[in-house]
Image (cartoon, rainbow, N blue to C red; front, side):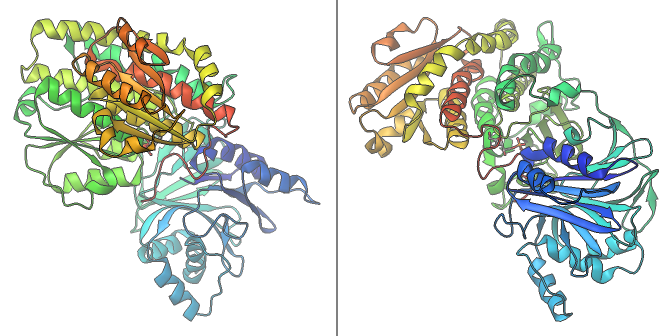
Length: 608
Ligand code: F6R
């Protein structure tokens, strides 16, 4: 959340900052701004999208010149989106300019202190307090000042700072919010995420909490809080620039939906060796798996939905009891964690604040943590005992699709791995599961072929007031994700319901013409789901069903049916989610929504 870019070098800074921000807009897009050193610090910022900032710059009488600067794209926390609340924020005397991602928890107390010292504030933000505090402690050295500031502020932050008395330096720090340092030739960068740097460099440092970086155009110095200089490993980005481009698609979301089979192949296939699942990256031994007492899967949003599917499968295939928690609840509910428990943390970005805090909570209790993460080297990956990467590639659209599907596939791998270790799956069953697991990417590919039919359906239902998504067992878990996709990008109210729960209240909301999407792939529950479909049909609902090939009796009750290929009932969520992703996408397009940047949202939720 919130994107930060900083540049120091020989080029004009403004275009580099704007280009970097464009690549980070998925992190927040309610306001944007840049500050560039040209004789003094020049700041321009505005409420709205990056293109509003660009227009404001174009309308200026003069152009911006200077080769050092910082930029920011905002997702508002303290203070509504407005010009004055936009970043960069300055100290009252204009000496210091700051961009910030995160939340300063003790900002009120610091504000009071600074007000007593005679400082005046113009915005409602916590960030302005940091700018003023930095200026208050400033005695000529940027690193020393940063150390003093860090000592006073509490919360989560990635900070980039410019000082008019040091036109050849940028100082930055991070704590619980990601920040990278891009390494160039006679130029260096800071950024919240890799896409902002890809055009310029592929070498970077990953800052750890409370590491401070002092950037000059020809040097990078890293310090700890005692001002000791530290050495760090240089990371190299291996992906192609086109991985972070739209590649001819109208939106990243559609590109990412289409990339699902490839992401699934990369995540699943190298981990299948003959009749076994090999998770070489993890050190969890078969003996440890046998001793697991209980698994706690913790995540947020769609990753939580993937975790619910995981619970059904892991319990079924390995008979290990699984609890699934929302990270924001887990961390504060004093969970009961025992020595032989395993905590599985699921996160596409690897930076979600609540999920990271849940990981730390589990570790505090001495519990082993295995994470399922997409972003290599992210905080969650680095702090876990074991990591299984999803190889989905960069996910740029705010609404996750390939991130979620690849998380599901790791759940399948883990369930089989645990089942084998605990001997709850026979050799024959394993062969059968593995054969079907290998086919999951192709099954998903087949579902993508429904795109044209779904486009037509989207036109028909684009103006729905409410949409319900129902299912039982794993189908219910998949329904949760389908419903979230629809509401977050199309703004249509939608709820997912365990089909058996409908008549305990929700059915009163079904009216003539209400769209109900029914997911019906679990054979033992099929007849029961048909009865639930009949119940909503009797109250005027229109039903779009998603069922397994061969379950043609569903055509008698549903208005439209999408069939998924026959597979193991454990793996159906991978296919059933696809028509729901496509339907959500096309309904959102039909309603004129900005699919990649839904209102009020941002990717990588680094605040609580
Ligand atoms: C929904 C969505 C979010 C994320 C959630 C967790 O489409 O993308 O619900 O799933 O914010 O994010 P990660 O997986 O990065 O921890």
